[in-house]
Amino acid sequence: MHLLLGSLGSGEATRCLVFSSILEVMQANQLNVEYFFRLLYNCFHGACYGSSGFEGFSAWLAHVWIWITGVGYALSVIGLFIIVYALVRLFELREREEKYYSTLLIPPGAEGGTHPRWEHIQSLAEGASPSGWREAIIEADIMLDEMLTRQGYVGAGVGEKLKAADPAKFRTLQDAWEAHKVRNQIAHEGSSFNIPETLARRTIARFEAVFREFKVI
Image (cartoon, rainbow, N blue to C red):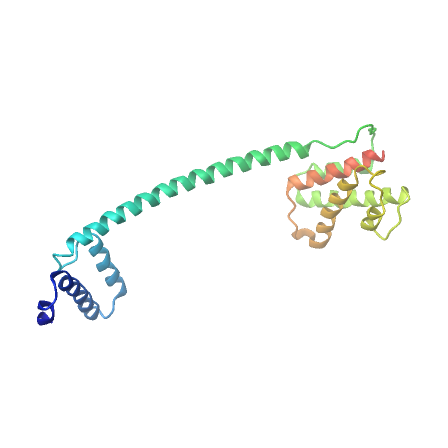
């Protein structure tokens, strides 16, 4: 081994000595992987034993590692600011959405009035229970079905009756469709559908817009 090192240049001899030391350590420790990585870590920080010519290279690696660490911290801070900004914007959007959909959509010229059945639906919708919200939407959809029947629409269900509706004579037709879609989701998923409060209020507001257009309430 020493004869082979003597025939090599100083740089190559240094590298061979380092790798020879690593192999000897791995054999002595029965291929202890943790010890091997610890040795590499020490080399990066200029602590490779048996290698004087490798100190400059290991010092350079340690310097590069410091730069990589600094850049990593800087990117982490930037990423944190981006996440915080996105969360703030998301909360602002949710707040504006809640204010918008909490306002009932009433078509122009609609007349107000009292309707015991609708008041019961509203009481369920204004509660804090998701099961109450689901029940309110289902009851409102039943009212919608009955209203469409009285208006002369024919079909096996709300969906078929809405398909036969004329948008020119049914200004809130899209509201009826969107509300009925939520009702279908509740019917298919049942109690496993954890409806958000915002969606529940929005759906009830759509039903109310339809009922006020046709003066049901």
